[in-house]
Amino acid sequence: MPFAEVSSLLDPNMKGSKARKYLISYDEIKRRLQAPEKMSLRSLAAYTRVSRGPASKKTLLESLSVLGLTPSTTTSVSSSFSKLTEGDTRALCDDMKDFSHDYIDYSNMAKQLIPEVNTVQHWSKIIETKNHLEDMRKYFKDPVNSGAFDNVTHGLGLGMLDVALDMIIMVIDQQIRILSGAAASDPADSGPPMRRIRRRHRKTRLHDSEKSHKVSGGGKEQGKIIPKGKVRRARKKIPRETGPSGPVEMHSEQCKPDDVESNVLTLVSVGYEAVSSGLNSSGTV
Image 1 (spheres, one colour):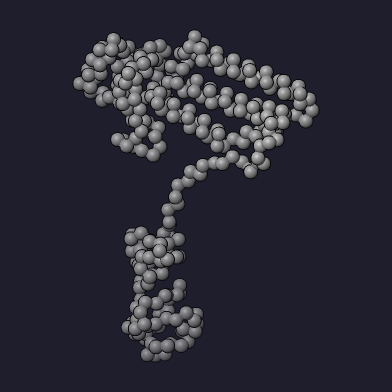
Image 2 (image 1 turned 135 degrees about the horizontal axis):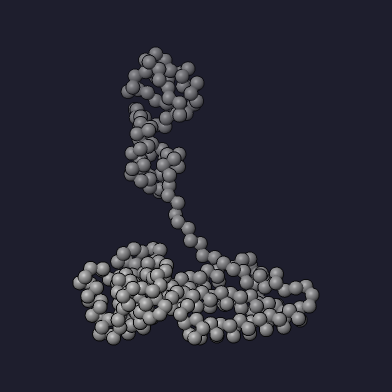
């Protein structure tokens, strides 16, 4: 039974109204009002993203009364989980499971953990360990043992425990396959597991754009568009020069003879000394 719809606080790509949405169920609200948290109306308003104004709090309290729920006067436990919904913590567990699959080389780890001697004894030991871990998982799942822990962590505690146990059991299963000979039919290792590349695109710096951009070529070069603001700065630093033959490139060292007429100045790519010696009093080469 849905009680409210809230925006995720952990969505890295969206903000505000575009953030991922989670439904808060009646049972989830009931868990927040029970021990050990015992949320107050103020804390529950923050949890359900309701305004803290009197009118909003009154509406929230009326909704709780219809369901037969009463918030505590003071919150018993406040933590970094206090505003994370169970949808947020479930997404964290899913991401951790995905990352462990993408970034851990279970096959290589299993090979490293197999001893060179007493492999039969090791085989028996890891099977016993796996069975013990599965029994441990079952007892952790029992609300009598860890119900309060799961509630106060909003489901993250037992979710992460599942991920950790799955990682350990994955290594054990790989060792069993190797020792039993089942891994011999597997394809040859092609290196570490495939990883998803998550990189932000590097912005072009002004320094790089000036190197690759000819001032006489405008804002485009080989299909690459240089931002308008950067073109203006480039023009400011290196003024364009035009002559009878059209736009030309300028040398890094400027040539400034006193008797050169500005309307006939043309530089050619022959080196600074050659250009200086070839200039006559009329300003032509």
